[in-house]
Figure 1 (cartoon, rainbow, N blue to C red):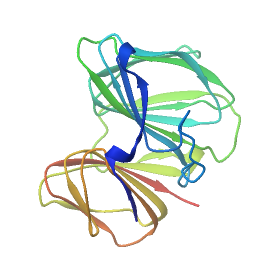
Figure 2: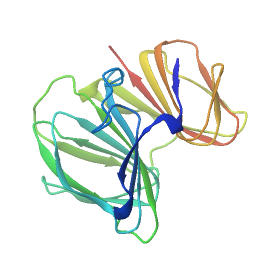
Figure 3: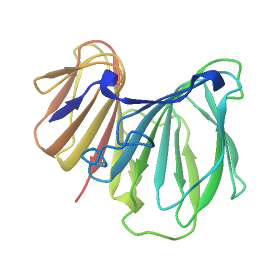
Figure 4: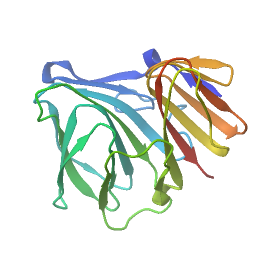
Length: 217
């Protein structure tokens, strides 16, 4: 188990434009050849957008992009014609495939926080695809078969416990709260990269929300 603390994330964004980013993996000017990916995961970014702030139209390709809104409302527009509002508890996935362009903005009057994960597909190319699962239920896995992954969202009360998936790679991100993971204690923004996970439990120290990525070989 490799624990990475919130304070260790690479800073990014543009404060003057109301954008604050924290990157878990090598990103942009923060190049680290020893931190390029874990399993299928190539990015896990915490993004904070002030009201009216956002990312102008930009391209993606050969990446599965999964977004979890923590608070606020995300406006998404892409070059395939989708225009949606993504709210807290919704899962959004953009399969960029051979190429797509999109815009991400906070058009609401309140701050927006979201966690965005980029996954490498098993096979490159194909046609772009998009979907939203509104209000995903606790412990209901969300499959991204294009990347051979499953997302498990878990919300635990203090003292409640859940099994960490047994898998070749598991990435656990703490959205909010505090949790004991094996022998480690993690807080909001912390993450654990677990190789060959087996018989590990997560126990809520406080009320906690977890994103657990199960990745096969």
